[in-house]
Length: 162
Image 1 (cartoon, rainbow, N blue to C red):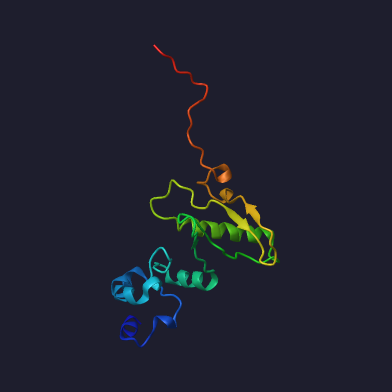
Image 2 (cartoon, one colour; image 1 turned 120 degrees about the vertical axis):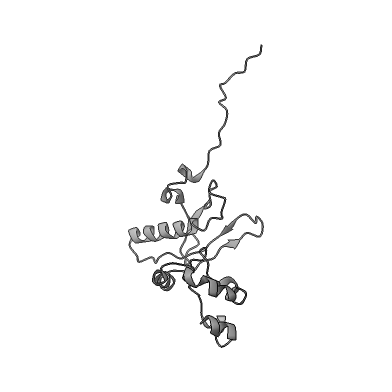
């Protein structure tokens, strides 16, 4: 397949994803310029030891992408469906938990000390109502209410002068 793509007999438009095992990565590197964003890496989940699991994930999973805010470049949002109204509540909650954890794993390197998901809203496309979700309860590393409390000096401490 690599030779066919390099020769131009197979176009990158002929497929949606390229899954790669690490043993083939050296040969696949010649496709980096051709594939662009479709090139497999660990961040997009396309460079995997378990290729069968990657195929299952792609065929049964959902695709989402981050949309950056034009006003505040450090912020953005993701619209991602995780169920249908006729599903049991427990299944919807489990799906939400999985989606949140997958998104949290995409957190940029070096930001482990920062909260990545700041707000979660739930809505159904046929309704304009939005419901705030307490997303922090689905993570062990998020503080209560999703707010990091700053260390402040005790207001009752009095300084003494000599």
